[in-house]
Length: 210
Ligand SMILES: C[S@@+](CC[C@H](N)C(=O)[O-])C[C@H]1O[C@@H](n2cnc3c(N)ncnc32)[C@H](O)[C@@H]1O
Image 1 (cartoon, rainbow, N blue to C red):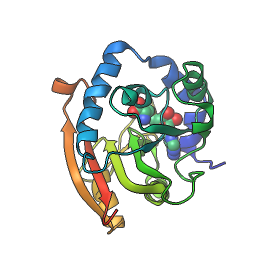
Image 2 (tube, rainbow, N blue to C red):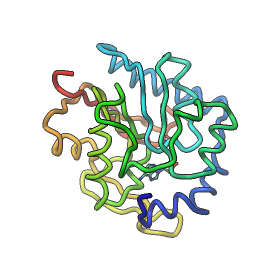
Image 3 (tube, helix red, strand yellow):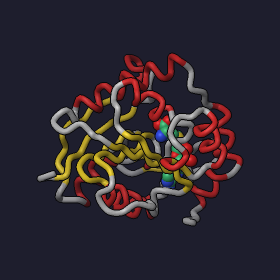
Image 4 (tube, rainbow, N blue to C red):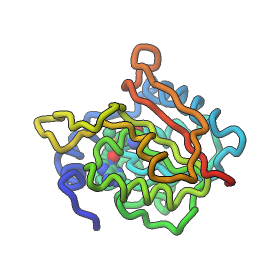
C-alpha cells in the first residue's frame, strides 16, 4: 500500500472528518449533474462506456453520472469510511470499488474509456504528482478529465492547520507537458457564482488517434 503523509491524513481522522462533513444532498447532486453535462458534452465524439474516478470519496460524481450516462462506473478511494458509505448506499457494485491510491492503480493499461480526478490532484504532494498522472494516463484508453483548483505557479495553500495537504498549479499544463500524445478537447472554469462549485478549472484530454 502506498504511504505518504498526505495519504496517511486521508486514510485517518482528517479523511474521516471530510466524509462526515459531506452529504449527497439533492441540490449538491443537481449541481454535479449540470457540471457533468458540460464534461460529457466535450466527449460527445466518443462517449465513454466505462469510467474510473480516482479519489471518489462518498461518490458525489458517481451518484450524478447515472443521470446522464449508462457507462459502467469504477472507483479507487483510500479512505475506508468513504468506501463504506458508497457501498452502504449502493452507489456502485462492490467489485467496482477499490481501496487504493492514484500512485498505483490496480488495472491493466488502457482499461477505461475515461479516467478522471475532481479535487484530488490538489491533495497529492508535488513529488508524487508525476506518478499519479502517469498512472491515470496509463489506464486511460481515450479520455482524461482533470477538474482541480488552478494557479499559474505551483503553490502550497494552508489547509485545516497544515501546509502539506493542499497544492495548486496548472494541472492541465502538467498533463500536456508530460504526455505529448494528449490533446485538449475542451476546457473551462467552474465559477462558484454561477455553478455553486469551487472555482475550479477543468480540461478534457484525448489521446491522439484513440
Ligand atoms: C476533496 S475529496 C474529492 C472527492 C471527489 N472526487 C469529489 O469530487 O467529490 C479528495 C478525495 O481524494 C482522496 N485522495 C486523496 N489522495 C489520493 C490519492 N493519492 N489517490 C486517490 N485518492 C486520493 C481522498 O481520500 C478524498 O476522498
